Image (cartoon, rainbow, N blue to C red; front, side):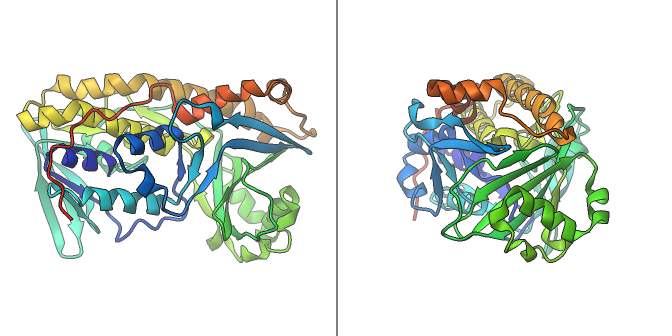
Length: 392
């Protein structure tokens, strides 16, 4: 969506296909990082964006055992917005659609699910999709695969996927929130258990982290025991965990960390999770995908306008984004293996690790994780022109 908006803004004809009728998915990622907010500022739409319902978090904290520790301080970042914005992804996507529709070259087709690629002489020249009105075929000089970690596009293209592994899955759920509840934090960590909590104003979006592949075992223990597991981590929720009536109120996110060896073929480029599925660690997935979109637009806009889309052009996008992808995934895997795996497999009471204790003693150290989470390893900047006359 972001790439479509940027290309249409630069005068390129774009059609975005979305398989659903709307964007209302409860458990999509939704942490909008300072790097993304900076892009909104560069595009001149930040003020309008921040009018949408959201929460602003300038420091991240978590409860480790019985102690609350501060982990990241975003107030010193060299950005317009020195905070994380928690905004439901459907609001974010609807906002980008509204901005894109100001440009006559931008189209979005809802309820259009891509099912296959159209190939001619080794080049991808279009896609096939199903719609309520029947099957359609759309041809274009360039197809962008941005259909997530279960990408149909990358599967049909036959791309080689490198699975980097993940030791956990996440059970997402919603539990009502009350004005007297604690403020936003990363959640609670105890030996053998981890709970992530996102403040949605009138409810908590909770992620209960479990060892990889243990869902069947947890189901066998029963929903009552699961409610008790949640309440034992956050006792203030004990009087409302009954809102989890059965397993239909709990959604399993199968965590994957992978990336394509090659992100492109003639006529086709993958970005975002379709090119590199990210761990939930750090909540960076959506922001890394947006950085991909900006980099792709910067490289592709003038080439698309000139009709010059050789392999070297598509390769330039991968070269630009491969380092930040690899570096981010390497850091996520380090956290998964050194922290999450040990916590989930542990039985002894947790104590605050030495690096976190140093952050409590010397607060300036919290700027380091804030920089990595908030900015990423190679923040992009909008270089595409706004040379298409908008309409309202």
